[in-house]
Length: 54
Image: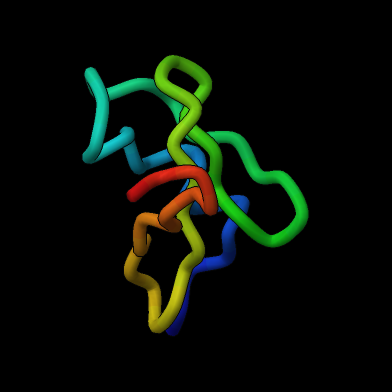
């Protein structure tokens, strides 16, 4: 049985920043502390690279 994005926001913390809470926005998870964005595929949060990053 898979987890929904809503479920993930309750149990996951940001793996890229300082462990901030994740918030669901437009089918992505966004860290409320560092602003990193993640898409979830097969119940795994994957960091989205910003267009401005080199």
